Image 1 (cartoon, helix red, strand yellow):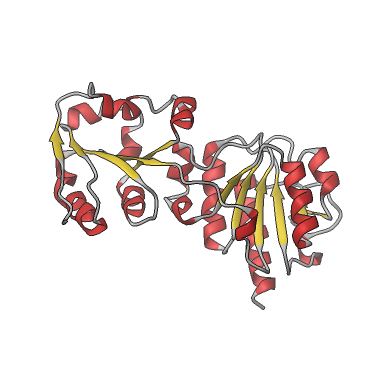
Image 2: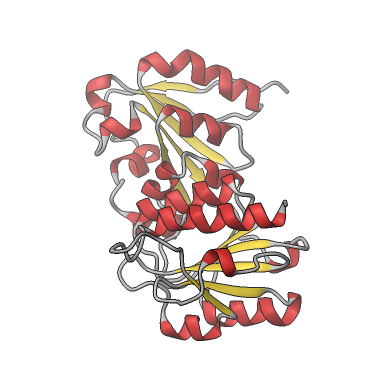
Length: 269
């Protein structure tokens, strides 16, 4: 049976189905419901082209025809809510969502059993700012990371602002949330011989001196204090980026691109 487009024109956001769009700042509620709020045309288009389950779209009238076509191409019955511009402008962050938003379901976590060999992994230890997590996700996608591991103290890459900053690349990245990053790293080493490399601004070993081939997991720490000491002690290597005198560190998202570029360069040399 061919999918149909279920279009509902609304003049307010009072419908129960639209509650997630009214509660953009209630991250914990979204987490409990297992949903992701997606915003902006480019990211919504990437969502519709992904494997994720889409719950609904909320759009301004100018998006009705192009989004109807995208839903038809996807081949699913996805509710499409159309609201006047003035109503959508009441939602937080209008400049970001551009009058086009969607709700999707958080996919099931990838497991360690799915890892290829050799593999390149990134683990987040205490990285709490969603914007930084989103940029790290985008870098992971750009440089071929096989799995992103979000530690117990890290922000989820499925938070709204993380998804936005990832430009939707999160939809194609394998993600695993762990409640015990220390144990997960130990399991990686035990099962696969994965080498754990901690990004450490205070290390005497520079990135150019490190071998980044084989099964590898790069650990990125918090914005304030870097990788925690308990995780750093578990690492096989602590590596820094050589920089000009007087500059001691990069933003963690920027640093991730340097580390991952070098890892990919070595692995594809």
